[in-house]
Length: 348
Image (tube, rainbow, N blue to C red; front, side, top):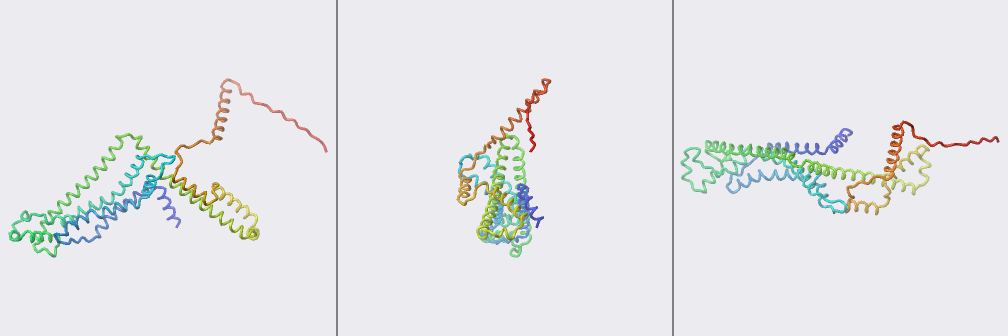
């Protein structure tokens, strides 16, 4: 259990690596699902095209939506988009950057499915077999005697090996259409790779400072939400612990004196003080509800204040250091104030 807990903490701390791993697993899952999926063309002119195009585009849409569901940044993006402005303004470039990063990861599995489907060629054969010109594959005079409806029904049965009688025609048509499908698959892979290359290559040509700014504040929003959730968990844990402890004290005031030694009392007092510190002065349900509501409606501005005591200490320290350096630089030490002490002894 400890190993799994450490692994889970590592994945939480390295969310980008975790999401890249999830995208890789989804891509492998899409390829494995297609290989395990048994493609069955209906071999009917009314349904061949609809079935094949649906198989080509519906699963990628499902994988795309699943990528959004598994990405934790979607809730962060929605929360940042819908939150009231309050004391903190919204930056559309940050929202755009977060949406683009989520979309890029979610497109990996659909691209793998489309490329594998086109490379296999079965859906392409099922969809466009009725558009073939049989005269290209040889002299088949029996087709000329058929009506247009019978001809379309015959071409629709080409993907089905058991329903088509002329195997030579079927093999030639299958190779022809699969060749076109594989060419489309390679063109699709080339287009996706070239687009990714352009995105990587063109990004440094624009202002790098704007990109760093959007990347920094998108990371800040994610980290701020995590730390706020962790702080709320610690506060809830301390609140529950103090509440239960006070309940038992009220029920039986003699419980601690009968069952605890002096050392355990000291330890319990230290634990109580630490729990009281973690409450941060919020000791009522209504106060906590107000804090949570204010955090949602009016987040604090991103302008941190410096403590006044730290400024005074820094000024004093800088003054002493400057005075000492100036005194030694002039060739003499700085005069130090001397204090006189008077001590009286009495014999009693």
